Length: 414
Figure 1 (cartoon, rainbow, N blue to C red):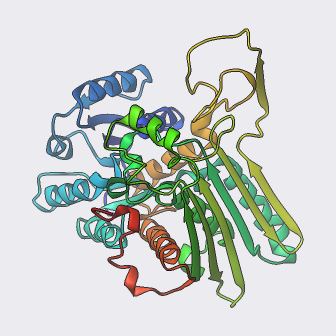
Figure 2 (figure 1 turned 60 degrees about the vertical axis):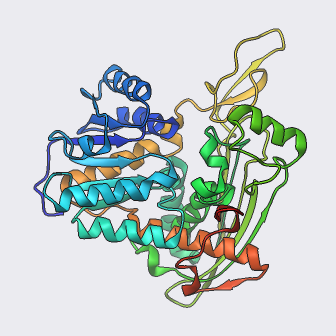
């Protein structure tokens, strides 16, 4: 992190799927950035992505037929790792090797959540980034959600300063299930909904409980208790729906991953005060679309947020017909009735502020608010929750046995 400030950060995307397009849309609200390169496994996806970059006015995006070609390109300063979970460590190893050998001039890397599938993988991601001298950012968008940023600032400035720090954070995220087949495969994704979505919930809750300006590790994790369940998608008719939609590789009759998870995390602040996180996540929710709910409670105050309580709502009668889509809200489940509309999903969900923050930190050589260190801490919490659910008991921290722990649903042959 010794480079001189750059006027424009040139970003290369690894992965051009659903989340990459979300990030790309958010870049419209980010200054001093161009998207100059893209690599993914399918040529047609790369070409579509490059056309979208240019249509959005975010630069001239070159597509690359190999990861190596992107990493050594002379017009790429930073890499955004947005490929599937099971590919991320290999991407990081390739980037490390290209930098250490002098083939790559990349000086920063950002990785989508979760950082890795296990503690060992996450620790290697961090080690590789630091050994290569990379500035690194962990892409946890909910920390940068506009309601979270504004709500935390008000609570800590006006309420916590006079009546005491917050002591309980609740977070929930629910929708009807992921877009791509690998999300549903425990070994590829690293688990089920706990791995996929609880990473959001525990980190945004931890962030809300952390005093402004204090390091995230100022809160010490004391214990975790987790529960997982299969509520919907193992039922025969729904398991068959998954098979028809994704093929035989997604077999929820015989190899399911959890579609519901609950977490309780006990923490301690620097003064010895006990704090709590309560979180739930689900792939078995059927409402208008993706629902995020947050609460922060303290001695004389409370913060509440629900992503589906939107200011804009539209009603369409049964006479209005059309194709299915997600043009009103992510993971949309209906096209009729009274529907909430998120006018700017990339902004409300935090992608715009997240990417603006990462670009400015990388451009100026500053440490981001969320780093691979935070990504590792999140994976440690997730693995603790999986282990707790497996043994049906609260797990005390520190828990060195989690270093090489693999959740039951992610084990080969499980």
